[in-house]
Image (cartoon, rainbow, N blue to C red):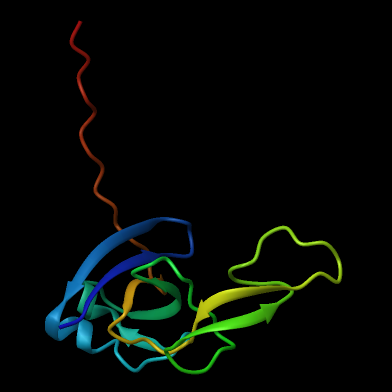
Length: 126
């Protein structure tokens, strides 16, 4: 069965992490990056847009690679590449844009506003 860790962020910059298992997780399998899902899966009202993710090894998903397999791609900018000179390209291992059971974390944007519960302040004991 599929298990996903959802990182949900709203437009104001707040984010929350939720664990999705079994039946709820199966709703994500087969979707592509940029796809939308009902937010009721995560206990919210509205829609969730899938913006990214990574697999169990930390390999990032990339929107311009079709499928769910890992591939060595030659890239010059974007997801999975940091600090390159002008004209420089690097070959990196990336995962495709389709969600499969190998995916561990999914990044989602929420169209509403998240309510984040604040923890009570810790008391200092001297």
